[in-house]
Amino acid sequence: MTRSRLRPFYATALTLILAACGTASSSGASVAPSPAGSRPASPARVSIVQPRDGATISGDSVHVVLRLNGATIVSTTTTNIRPDQGHVHLYVDNVLVSMNYALEQDMPVHAGTYVLKAEFVASDHAPFSPRVWSNQVLFTVK
Image (cartoon, rainbow, N blue to C red; front, side, top):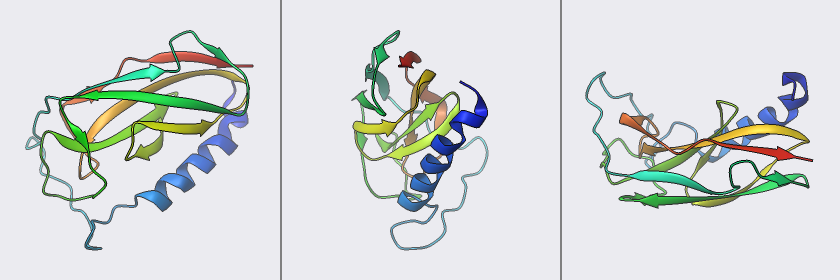
């Protein structure tokens, strides 16, 4: 799928991301980045359960189901991070399209082939070190 055909999808996703999360903490204060090299490791493992790799789906949305082991999803953004708490970021074709506080969601799609992956990140939305990535899933929309 060409970038020009994906622009509406990416624009909608970016708008939703910015509206849902922003970079503010629950107190409304701006979240400061952590110093380089001070990111904790996480025991978490995240995987994509649905769609399955190689799946062909029809329609204008895909139902994404993730599995998270060794950690929990929290809804609060904070700089007081713990290795076993955080959020999930979804990437389509290596572009961040969703910052999620749940393990299931529907994402809008158009006809084409996509690569989906998820990352479990800390409660400040920054990655752990090392990063906690899911398997990549390739799926096609008719």
